[in-house]
Image (tube, rainbow, N blue to C red; front, side, top):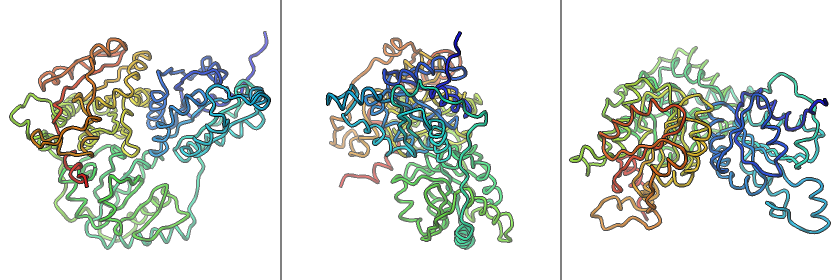
Length: 577
């Protein structure tokens, strides 16, 4: 019996397996059939069929965040374009996904030239997919032959794991099935880029001047530290300096949240008051691995000149920028300064930070119009009781909390005590709907159960992902915050709409249809619960622990007019002009 040939598809799959990718998310298609058929029979990698492209790509995103690399296989044109939003988010938030596709082959291209026709799923420009993906990847390649395929595949994967961002690879449809040499048994490694010595010395010396002249320095940690495996180095800097630290919302849980030096997450006006106070009083911000967005506009307008910044994009000390310096080298040099300098150790010369004691920060941030109705579930009451349950049951190291952009993201950012990597959110790209698709990838990638909190509008966008969870017997929990309105959108349109007697109505485009969530969960093969009161929520939470082989959808009924103080403060910063 003839031995089955080793193909280009097998080569890519072997390299992925070497990099600990044991699941590939997939949408099938005729162009990409040779790859999907190879995947189906490849030993050691499981095919995860998804219901649509966003479902698959969101899952790949969080798999990459928790595992270090992910892959999603998509059909040409109609499928890749549908997944583009998710891959753009992965690009912005530093999540390395290998986007795999196939396009019309050599025979089809000859027919196009002869007859002037357009093949299905094509815009007519056969380079369109790669052209589009070149904007949201660090490398994009279309292979027209198996010649040179190993080198091109290796280069793409190295770029992904070096930069922690997506790459795109397509083949002419026949190429995935063409013969290919086997790869070496040694896994690929990221590129190691070293800093220019003089530039590094100049950057650290200027940074050290700013740090040592400050009275109240503060470390501001971001997600790039986690993505690039520099968490141990960050912890050493915190320990050696004695300086307190905060994180961005995207970087929340970059380390285990230890109350000795972690003051809480800084989310601009959505932060708890003690965090805002310390940030505002700080006269030196040591920003390590942060992705700066307009969520931090106040921060940049008021702290720019006092900032020492090291990221993969930029090294800066005050107004001085330095080329040819890497974040890792800068952090290592800064650690050496803290270890060897005779400069007195910190901490901050101000009242030591104290974490809010339960039921804070939730109680003081809950909508005061419901103070006389303690059984009404508000956003803050949901997190008050849910976070207490996780802590009391010692489950913080067993779950990932997953969020798209919604009111819940900013309310949840006030939580403390999370374990490293336990908070996952679309906090920079800010995609509504991310969380439901992301639950699958976060759980498969980490081995920890996903507890996902979705806005009802966001859930409606990607609700089919519940079926994918059920299909794969994954017991993620999806909480749907059911208030019938795109609350976060209305906050930024006009926050006064949440005042019942203000005379400002909710905008028509922010009102959502009413869904029967229990019926939907049954149709998709999921368990379901509904909580209309705090007592019902507290009764449901223990039941979730016993559900093993299927997802659970929990509808949390919240008043339409509930406005958490976190969002109220953000909305008042953005009042209509």
